[in-house]
Length: 235
Ligand SMILES: NC(=O)c1ccc[n+]([C@@H]2O[C@H](COP(=O)([O-])OP(=O)(O)OC[C@H]3O[C@@H](n4cnc5c(N)ncnc54)[C@H](OP(=O)(O)O)[C@@H]3O)[C@@H](O)[C@H]2O)c1
Image (tube, protein in one colour):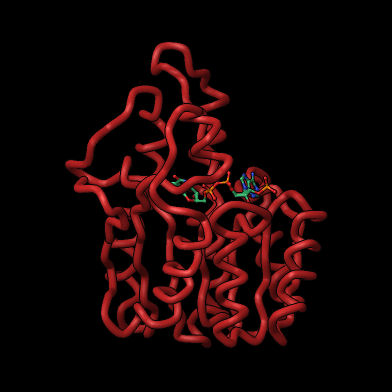
């Protein structure tokens, strides 16, 4: 299995990669800005599995400026992709009235435009792999869920990613591609701690990482075009 995971340097993505490695992935390409952390992840994977982990340092904010660049780097290592997990995300928690245009653009660029463009530019490899594309959304972007002040644009960007998932499942259903979005509830990572310093999440990154890895491998047989809330509280 050839797998691409964005946002692999820490938090949920870091754990997803370790779980995928233990579950027999042949090659995993991990993407984020922090190359040192990706190398640490490679070291950990090599201790417990035979996976070939390839770190790629890349800022997803650059993707809209050159949409072919990251796919080009990935194509240097694989000819087909079985699983793409768009996990990287950025959250700026600020009141609606004070958030700047630059901050809105940054969140939409990383949380929506980059995954969309990455899927688009990897389509030839995804079609060969008859791939499962898993987009990591948020409960905040799930219709009818509890909403939080300060997260309006973050939640809107995650809702956009979720709806994109439904649309692509329809558009590529005859190509054997499967698209699903997981709308995650709270997980105890740096992102959560920065946004809600006084809150402790009921789920660890290791727990969520193991779930996402299992879903990415096995969920394709049961779900397509779904936005699935992953939370032990009621949305
Ligand atoms: N934690 C939660 O409670 C929660 C709830 C719902 C949804 N989620 C979603 O789950 C995903 C993972 O979040 P997390 O909690 O694990 O957050 P995290 O600990 O902050 O990790 C975010 C990951 O995304 C990468 N990333 C951020 N900006 C990037 C950029 N411009 N270019 C490339 N990589 C970038 C980071 O790597 P670098 O900094 O090295 O670039 C890091 O690997 C996100 O999509 C988040 O929205 C999280």
